[in-house]
Length: 386
Ligand code: FAD
Image (cartoon, rainbow, N blue to C red):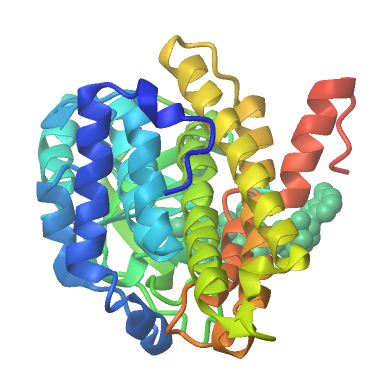
């Protein structure tokens, strides 16, 4: 596997173990079937408890069954899962960074005890409801509302593009609290409550091996005890997104690495004009560029892990890495696809699947444009969103 400047030589024992466990899981459990899942538009839900058992959901948290592994180990895990498919990494990202993280960080003791062990083990599935049909890049304009009624809240609104909503047991729903000056709050909404529906979104041409849906909330009553007590305002959802984007910055490298390995193997094997296509300078140039782009993205990801570990990571650092590494994977998956010729457009090989997935990864968790604006504001002090 491409590790051109030997970054993995510095991994500790636990980090190696987690990398190898994830690699073996992918190899043994899903690598052979992922192309079929992509074609069929399905996710292997039977693997969710197994992923839980192996500690793939938020292992970087502490307590309630989570082992508090290093941020590098967490990043490597995301990298290995996304080397298989962005849908597999999305499952782990949403469950860990977007559902377990806010409960761990902002939840009550009772909420933590009820949900963290079950989500960590993959016995329960969570989803994160922020995006709405009319508000994607600007979620602070959300229309979903919560109104206090005695010791309950009544929720109304709709969320869309929600990963795993059709199979979720609980949704972290972000809504404006009408009874408190429209302050944004997080609500834990069990999906079997009256008034909750979660339609599946079909016909996706990207991230097909992942279940995506809507969440419709019609006069849904939840007890006050289901509000995340530790946060209010957009800081709540945005801090979760920083965690998930950190995982994406690592994960995208995995997808690109897998494309590189497929292209390298193909180029040394496939013969044209009397020899392997890898003997031609044009093909070598593509591999050299791909390896260089992957390596520079790895360096950024490893640095992010160091900053996160010592508490110096800023959301803008994460924006830079998400923006750069996903663009890199998007570009390089296309080059790999090209090197595979006609075979490259089939599900027998991974590059085109990764290439299609990267359209989602480039778009969700803040589009490439939005991360550009975040960096622009950080660099100039002038915001250019409006
Ligand atoms: P829009 O915000 O309408 O943007 C359209 C275009 O306009 C983009 O190119 C954008 O970059 C550009 N644009 C917008 N504003 C500006 C500006 N100020 N300046 C310049 N350009 C601008 N959301 C969740 O809450 N939970 C999930 O689990 C989840 N999972 C997802 C899974 C999939 C498969 C997909 C596709 C999306 C998912 N999302 C999820 C939603 C995702 O986060 C949004 O699609 C994303 O934030 C973009 O919003 P939008 O699609 O409404 O696009």
